[in-house]
Image: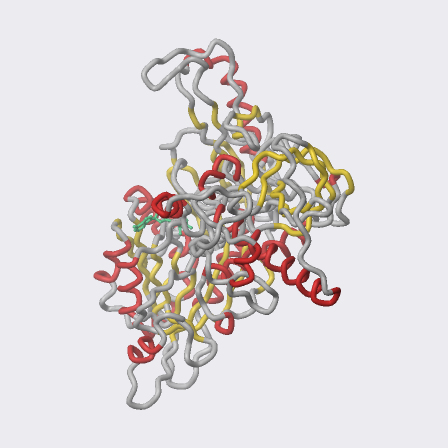
Length: 616
Ligand SMILES: C[S@@+](CC[C@H](N)C(=O)[O-])C[C@H]1O[C@@H](n2cnc3c(N)ncnc32)[C@H](O)[C@@H]1O
């Protein structure tokens, strides 16, 4: 199963997926984050698609489709007769190329969305032909690459790209910066023969969708920069679309029977929709003429920004409205510095811009508190003043607050990038680690925070467990993050937290005293997800509750039911979504039958024998 969000959906869109469904380590919002999931950089990666033999229309008919005609559960099964425009390929080459498409990558996500749209069209065409007694219509020839055509956008893919059609043709065009209902002028960039779609550059809107209002766009680089492609949409429409990303991530990637996946809850919105990113990483390319072995200094200030859409070059970005005010001010200052210091650089580089908070409690005095040196922005509440600075040194320590919890981090290390959503997000997870107990059942007392980083979950969740005598443990492979986590526990006055710097596989050696019936495991792995060894141990340990997203194992030893799945919009304006799934261990077994027997009954489908369960 794809790692959704908190393990990455997206695409999954998750990664996600966030689908974290999935979600892939190449990002949907690549210039901005190392945490987002998918990429819309279909141009650069188009060659990956050559790997797959998408079936032509006839072959598609034979594919397994559900009632709506959607392609399901066959993401890596694109074999079959070759498409009309495709040259034959040796099976060895096919196999080699098939390997190139990573499971859950944006390429795969896009391909499945395209296939499902083709399948839907095919079914409606077949219905029409059956009524009229006609044969299927011939496709017109494809427009020349580089030509400009008008297309109508019919769907939004989980990658954030519009899926469009030219009038009179079933061909699908993948068009960035477009939304359903738009008629747009595009420049055809490439025809992917086997995959039966084409990619095109967005040129202009001919007739806007009712969902589009370009006055909402706050960034002057919209459609030139590759990020933030949803700015023309109302925020509620962005959230509704992200819910479909999570739905599709489970449908297309989980291998779960749909009956065991509960209805996906509405996406939780970010309190801030602009000005939310506490970290930006603009960069500049190496000087012209420089190579790996030949260093030459810049003779003029290079563009500093993000990779342009459909380009490999850096687009000069003066301002980035999704950054917090302090980070935006930091960008301005760094750009000014570069105009003076560019000659000192002989290589390309990435600039770190990380917000830092200096909090001063408000006293009784009415006197105004002077800002600390470097303060770029000030936020006042009834009880404190937060002065914001911008850190550019990877090794410096930055401080951030979530409610009254304080977190220190090494500036260059991972920490969630949207502080505005962290209070409601951690409250949501806190509310879900415990559950209403039935008579004789034990309540959650122990917390295991796998992939803990600097302790986000351990620290924000532990206080709710300590009154019942609970303890918690966080583990992370990054020693520096664990050093921060220990300091953070101390700063927050939490003595019952333990942190281990090790591979997550080592975790279960340290929790022998934890009663699994009283334990919740929170999982927030990197995008590649939990490895098989960790999952095997998790299933052997059999915690009562799991919050996060667990990669499925075919031969699971325990059975869990999915209680809920909800997307969280950590990255407004972008096509990225994160997700949280809550899982409960299912204990009910028939007399004379072990839980292992139950798991062995249906190792392929991973479907619960009791309706709402899912084997992990
Ligand atoms: C997505 S981050 C989550 C961090 C933390 N939960 C947070 O929200 O701040 C994933 C973390 O997994 C850690 N990690 C990656 N591979 C690991 C492994 N094999 N074992 C343990 N931790 C790992 C990384 O160091 C990183 O801190």
